[in-house]
Amino acid sequence: KKLFGQEELVLTGTLKNTGGAAQFAAIYECAKSSISGRNFAEAASDILQRLADYFKCDRACVFEFDWSAGTFSNCCEKCAPGISSRIESAQELPLENIDFWVKAFKDKSVLHMDGSSFLPGADQIVRGTLSARGVRELYAVPFSSLGTLRGFLAVENPQADKDNTQMLEIMGGFIFSAMEKQRVQGETETALG
Image (cartoon, rainbow, N blue to C red; front, side):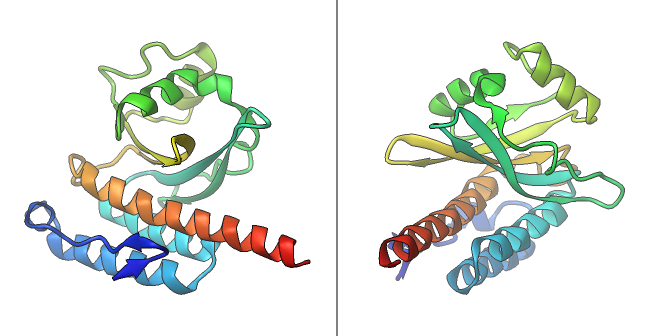
């Protein structure tokens, strides 16, 4: 089957054998169905909430790059109870602030930082921002299209099933598909007037 022009992802034996397989399958089905008929904001919000619940993390968020403006922005997030939203303060930030992330995303499919390896090579702005927010551990998965980084999905301070980076990659793919669907729809509407 095809989903937005892409081959539908299939749960393999490896994925089925990871912790929380029933919850993973439910998230997978929800993500697949939510993207197929809903707008980006609704689909991403649903997926991020399920990711936040699954990983028991403080925050699950999506950042989008704007290469022409040299910025990145938080386009959606879900926070655990008691965690303040950062979406308003994370708009049109300079890409140079996360230059080392961009380099790392080109070499890795998943970026993991924890207390022992946190922020080597990062500048003071990023160090101070993440430390002030209480981020002790972070996983991030990049989105790319035709060799260009478009953004990333991140989970902060996960407490459960941390090593299940395959799940982040798959859910990141779903979110990116929803982003692309929105972009194409917008271009089509503009072209049709």
